[in-house]
Image (cartoon, rainbow, N blue to C red; front, side, top):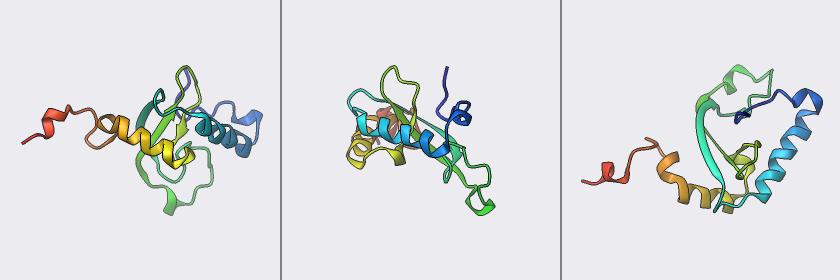
Length: 109
């Protein structure tokens, strides 16, 4: 099973080509059917493909990904068009917002 940052095949193409595939998948993504997930990772290198990332950019935080159903191409939210990304946040905020996974009842006074 592929992970959100599965770069094992990147050696067969340039990083630019590999990233272009993700951007193209982001353009075709339907926010009504897309799957989303997040993990802690490198904020300035969410796909973890930059071997020489300067130390000052090695910042950990939440990174958000989405994919079309049945696809193994996870696309980082920054590579998804803004309107699609906004729709994903609206639809999946309970699963993406901090603290993730808590039921809405938890936030009621």
